[in-house]
Image (cartoon, rainbow, N blue to C red; front, side, top):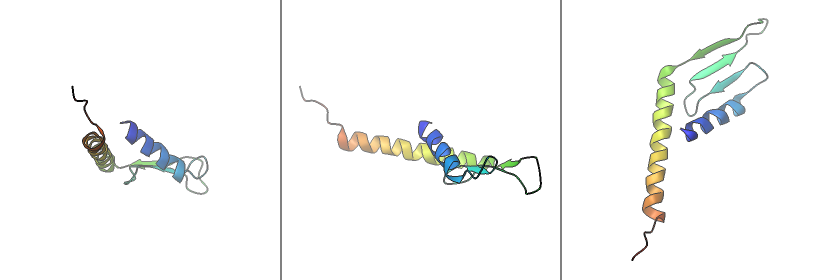
Length: 79
């Protein structure tokens, strides 16, 4: 979940345009906030399907990376 949080924070910081316009989600955008010109209110929208796809994708890659590191870099001590 830490990796997911870092990807969300990074996508927010990269797409932030002013105070009101930004997107969250990598590789699929699942939340966006924007302001239409001439309006004083924020508009927003989110796609729950993209949220779950992002969570599953990042979780799968994190677990695969963990097991890859265990297999290739962990050497148990012989007694």
